[in-house]
Length: 398
Image (cartoon, rainbow, N blue to C red; front, side, top):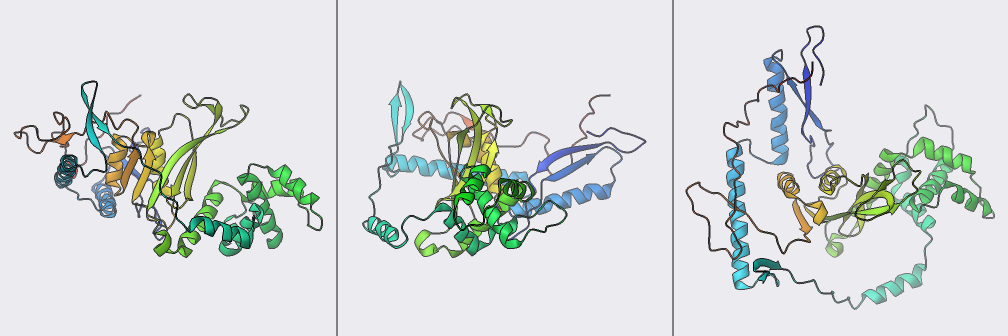
C-alpha cells in the first residue's frame, strides 16, 4: 500500500482478476498478464473510474458471462437443479453405471464400483513388435536430436548476454547435451565426460556446457521450448485416430533432493525431504505444463494456474484431478472459466449434494434419493451492486 506523500493520492492495488484474453490458454491469442485494479481514494477522477469499468467489460465478454449477477445466479440455479434431477432419475432407473445409494452405519452412502480392466486390442502387441523390428531401441539423445530437427525447439533458447559469438551448430549441440543432462538428471559433468569418451566426436568441456546452461537455459526458455514441441505434436496428430486434445489430467509428485538444496522441504504426507512437481498431462501423454510448488501449497491453485498458463494450442475443456486438486472454490472457478472439473473424489461415499434455494417460500425437496435437507443459498449479499464501485477500504497504519 502506497502512502500519501506530497499531496498525491494514495493507491491500493488489489488483484481483481486473471486478465487473460483467451481463458483456455490458447496460443492463437496473446494473453494479458494479471490485471491490477487501481482503487484510488477521493482524488480519483471520473475518467479513471470509467476506464476501469470498460476494462472489466472486456473480461466479462472473454468469460462469456453476463454483467448482471442476478442473471448469472438464476442460470446457475437452473443448471444445478437440472443436474440433480438427472442424478435422481438415474439412481431410480439404475442407469448410473453401477452407482448406488447404500447404507453405512445407518447413514446414506454413495457406492461407486471400481472400473474394470479394459480388454487389450488385438493388434496392439503386433504393432509393438513391428516398431521394435523396424527401429529397435532408440537412444534418448538421438530422439532429442530428431525432435529438434523436426521442431527446432532450440531456437527458443536465447542468450541473456549482450552478444553471441558461438557458432550456431556448436551452440545447438551444446543445448541438446545440456537439456539431455538436465532432463535425465544425469548432470552436466557426466554428459561432458561421456562426450569426451566417444571416439571421433568433438568433445565439449564441462566449462563450455555450464556456460551454455547459465546463459541460455532458464525457466521461460524451457517452457517456450516445451510449448513448441507440444504444438508441433498436436499439429501432426491424426485426430481421427487419436482424438482432439481437449482433456487434461493433473497431479503432483514428490522428488527426493538433498537437504542442502534451498528448495528442499519436508513433506508431512509423503515423508522425507524433497520438492513437489505438479504436472498437467494431456490425455495422450503430452505434458503441457509443469511447475515446482511448495509442499504446503494448494493443489487447486496449481491446477488452475496450469490451465491458464500452458499457452499451447490444446483447447482443454475437461480437467481430471484427484481429491487434493478439487475444492468448492475449485469448482466455482472451473465454472467461471468454462471448463469441467472432474476429480476422483476419495470421499465420494460421504458426499452430500446441496440443493439451491429457488425461492424463499419453496419447501425443501423430498423426492431425492439423497439427503437434500440442506440448501445452498447462491444469492448475493444484501446491498451488493456489481456495477457500482464499493467504498474505499479504510486505511491501516499511520
